[in-house]
Length: 570
Image (tube, rainbow, N blue to C red; front, side, top):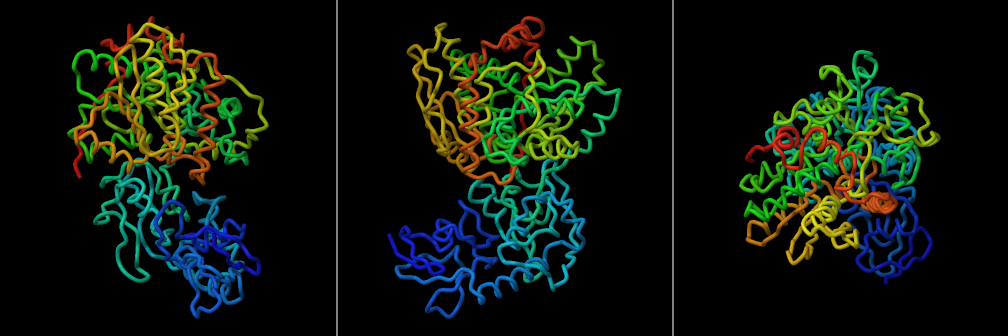
């Protein structure tokens, strides 16, 4: 431990800590913009500069390591003056040409520029905002880039490179003309972007945000000729309350269902229903591959960000991917056939809306292989915005239940939202389908948690099934390389986002390790509290097979619930 003096008070701090970390533990706020926990230190914005006794120049707190006996002033007059000047220069490069820009910005309510301004004490801006004259990048189905709001903090670049291992962003030009862009300024929809949306979480200014579908959803809700059904992903229920002031991980399933009905949806269903269906199809596919010498390992297909990643970077492993559609797309396919026919609703009148924690789901819904299954995809953030626009106090609502038929699910479906959850759900079903015996212990602890890569071997009646789990595309790449080097697996679950869907690009901001951990705990509590915890025990899924599909892996099931993917190259 080292002893330092910060703002007149002595603290003991761990050796190797930065001034910023030490100040944080002392509950002293230092403004930052280019700093993000978990990313490399850039030190570009300089807003975190502090005064150190004995040193002539101010030093960046994020990049300066604590030394024994340091005397540090974090908010001296000299520091405050420099910060104000720096902040005004940063603001001059950010599009605040009219107040309307702030009112309509995607970061309205959690703008880091505003947070920094509060700490610095900005009450006027002397420099006029400079119009950079850049056009918006709308080439992607999932993410919009607004260069005029960019302050070149570099966080999106580092997130994409260091965490996701992709690196689609770069800085171009010099001086005031510096801009963050894509290769040859081709646009995010024309490079190797996986649509994961992690860059959105890192962007402090609203220069990156999802492609909005909520206006389209309002239109269909207000069209009496349309029968609009909505599905909600498992990770949404433990995050949707955050924009309304609740703590991360607060479960608001019943209130969310009630709010969706008040918005005007004709039926409120659960993506968990088709998560159970996915396990039936994917589990059957795994057993068939094991028994019949099929291509192994079987790779899960629930994460559209991961799917686009393998299409770009590991196309030779495409035969390993499960042919199952994701639960989102399975739901759309079933809603527009089985549900529509059972309720005598013309297909052209059925509109399927998804509420997802994921920006990549917007791209998935537009894939030509599955186009038409799902009409519109709302992120968790977009749904919160719609609920607020409708004047609904969601957390004050009485809890309501999902509609039957496609609203009943097992606990196994709930844990799909967490990294390792698909693996655990599949093992619960695969064990009983293979052995014909009831599984005594349902919790597969070895595949839970936020460790980047997890490997487990399960004994199923003498058959050693080796599984792997990876989340975050940087970890996915490492596991893919292990497969290519010859390491043998039977089944691998892969998720594009850190933490799985709980940390998806469409989740409330901030989404960091703490929020992911708390959401994950809540997901497992939901599972633990359910009487039905295995996908194959879902009586409504069984009825779907009896009435419509026949059996898992049938010809009709393949027509509706399975797909293929495309090599894209880099």
